[in-house]
Length: 45
Image (tube, rainbow, N blue to C red; front, side, top):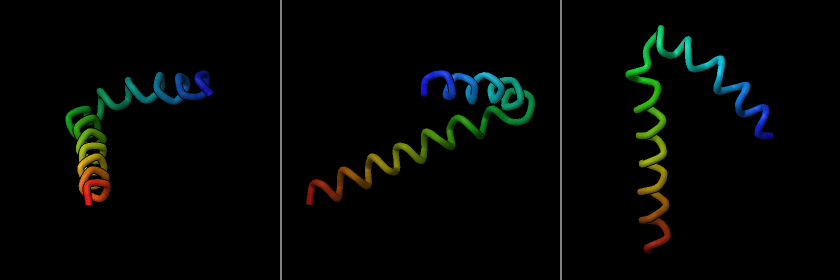
């Protein structure tokens, strides 16, 4: 499983830098944060 993850990450890095690294990274961070906040409120109630 680790090998497949590395293969997916390695080729993705160069194209992302050329196209638009400014939107790709924050996009995932925002989604993760939203999921964490939602899970927190759901578990809190």
